[in-house]
Image 1 (spheres, rainbow, N blue to C red):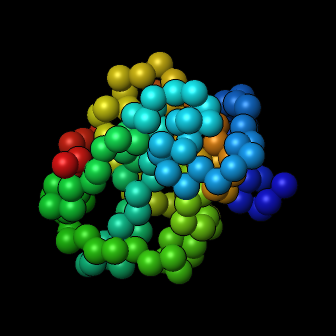
Image 2 (cartoon, helix red, strand yellow; image 1 turned 45 degrees about the vertical axis):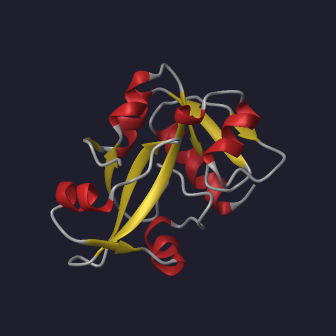
Image 3 (cartoon, helix red, strand yellow; image 1 turned 30 degrees about the vertical axis):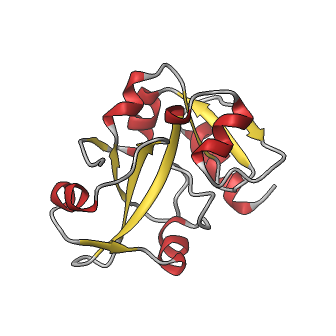
Length: 156
């Protein structure tokens, strides 16, 4: 088991959430790929999109429904700072995950997080488990509790 997957599993267990980590058998770097593998709609996939806060220099996490896109202007407004592209080094340093497997939980360092209201419309949503080959299901309420994320409109 990879270090990233172990961190996600431990974070979920520490929060008292029992989930089954699903090994996809294929890369699930896109929401459409993940949805096809687990048999859900694309919007039930919680995409982890990371931007760099231009003032703070820190990564900011946006958890959005799989079919939605982050609107940078709206996202900047909710964070209170201009946002730019987060490179792989920043993402790895702050979260401990590689692009394509960023989980909403198990980060190496605290991260500000925001959640797309669309994700709250489902009983079950799916998220990356720290690798491009693993996902897990959880409730929107558990996602909010685990991430301490603010629900707000930041999508196009």
